[in-house]
Amino acid sequence: MKLKIEFHYPISFIPYRHQNTQSEVGKAETEVEVRELSDGEAPVAMLVGNPPNDRMDRHEARLALKDDGSPRRVRTYMGRHFVEAGRASALPYDVAPGRIMNSFFGRAKPRNMAVDDPTYGKKKTMTGEEVIRRYSSAAKPFRTFNDDHGAAMAARLERLASLMFVVDGVVYEYTPEPIIRITGRYGEHKAFIGPRPRKERHDHDSFDFHMYEFGEPIRSSLLHADTVKDLYKGADWPFFEVVDPAASAFDGTGYDVMELARKLEQSLASSAAALPWNMLEAYYDLRDALADAQGRITPRLVGALEGVAAVEAADDPAHIAAVAASAVVGDRHGYQVRETFFSRRSEYLRSDKLSDHRGMAAETLARWGRRPEGQHWENGVGPVSSLVEGNRRTMEILSAGMACDLARRAGIDAAVLIEAARDGDRIIVSQDAAFSSAPLRPAFALVAPDGSMRVLPGAAEGAENEFRKYLDHAEAHADNAFLVPAPGLGGF
Image (cartoon, rainbow, N blue to C red):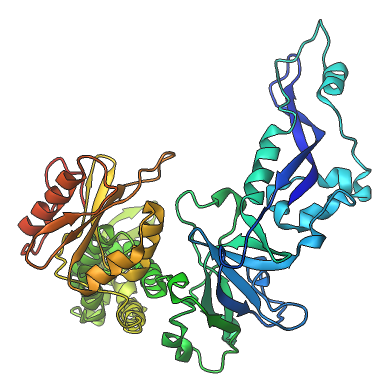
């Protein structure tokens, strides 16, 4: 179906002898097309429904029960999720153009509030020619002038239209995979269905589809929500039903453990100057394990967390406090200057932050202990499990959730990877090491328990050499207690 959309856009310019850019509001119109699909082309993958609640944010509200109390259908199309939004008959915006701001297309910010809201004095729209006549002349021409006649905004609206479709007269809009999150703020335990947090690279990031909440909620895919249900007893649970298990693949355990581990590492780093020697060594182990993990829960990372949780208090707090009190190293402007090493160590021990750090590690390990059965594996992975060379990172995949995400980006069937891992094969992926405006598709290799390697179709030329180099480097450091990057390989 086709929709006409009237929108506003900025006409920008720098007047004669001015330094700063100014703008006026232009008005234009475009026509976008929303595809119509059959039930078979976009099958129902899950049913969702947050109960009415004033504390829901705008992301969670899109996944709320419908006005009649029935759940919303979530369909999948080309590997992505789309949530039921309403009847297609409500889409036309040419009768009341301002209504578009409360619609899916409002993410592009196509209307200027100063024009639509009479309390702003109804700012007038202008054409490019009117702007030129008002603000410039032959004697005082613009330093710069930009009027794209709305082409950039029209392209954003067309992009949003491509993230919608209609099935049987009902509109479905793109959403990241719906997941469960449980919060425990203010003593209240709440469970909501929300979009998976943290956008994937290049995943429609300019339209803010993903949820960036504060605090430390627990998260899970809908399929494995039973693993976290008893973390907050008494929480009200929303309605959800997974129709297609393959469509619910978020690695909530991996996400939570990495977030908790990063927070622990940051807290240890902020106290590094005060840490007792054994905790300092545990901190360095955790720091290096996190650098190697790259979002995965590796045996090395779990071991580092166990190391932090097991640190014993080796120093006598009273003795350190006495040393700190007597360790005066000079006098500055009439004030005694104490030796900061001992004073910081004394404060760390006095406030029992060592117990806090041990507790944070134990909490992280407890979350890891609730991982869904069969969704994570090791398959012989060694202490070096990621390696950078140039702009490519080669690493081992250790969870079904990450395998699904990477397979979707590569355009292959994730089941091939997951079944191979469950048979004991190691999954190796080569991908971009950092954000790139033109990312290369991930390439995969499967390494059997006997050491034989099979590169999956679609890998770029030279990918096999990257896999071999990674395997050789990992094997060379398999027994090393202290790991260092190989020369010229950029680290791990």
